[in-house]
Length: 95
Ligand SMILES: [Zn+2]
Image (cartoon, rainbow, N blue to C red; front, side):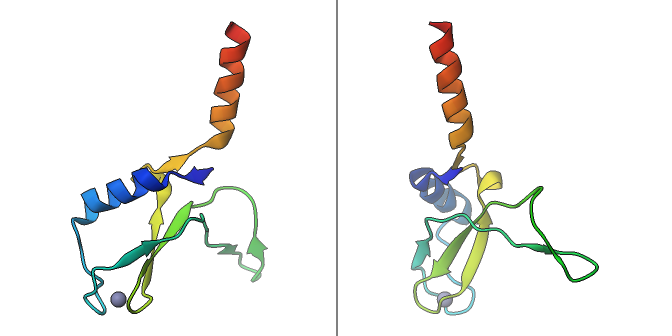
């Protein structure tokens, strides 16, 4: 799974409509190129690894560092490499 940067910026501009940082009013944002996810903590204070996760993309204010996490799945800006490879293989078999 990887970020489709072109699509991400296009969608953010579309949805955010040029919104400024709520803390410093700057309009300069920078988009990270990595996908991160929060780790769930269980009742016994253990970290729960594996299972479902939220593919979040950090977007930071260039002036004050305020960072928001965008769910790339909801925004629709992720390329699923596993599916791409799989479908390429399937196409190859059909020939
Ligand atoms: Zn800011």
